[in-house]
Length: 108
Image (cartoon, rainbow, N blue to C red; front, side, top):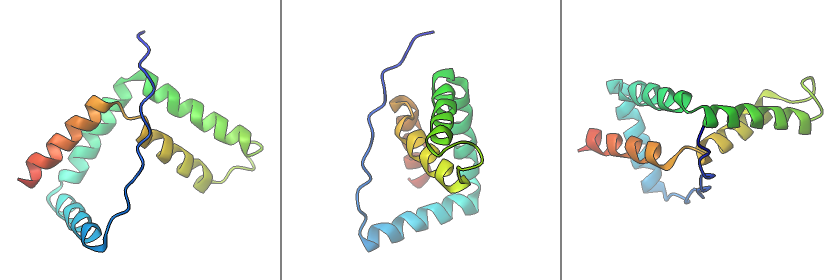
């Protein structure tokens, strides 16, 4: 299996109130039309095909549990926060670009 380079971590830009409003309107529109679920399903399918991404998420889960002192000590919130952060940061760039292209197409 070919090992992919580590994805760059993206810093989230602070959004102005008008940008937040536009983002929320976009999300609402995507949810109302059912596009959000379709995009989410497509992203999930693309990531599950990539064993390296899935293995990374499994390893991150194990590391988070270990750092927290074991399964009985870790909270769902801690685990979720670690996985969402790592998962978002390690989405391969071509998959991210494809998702953005689909969102732009929907918005136009």
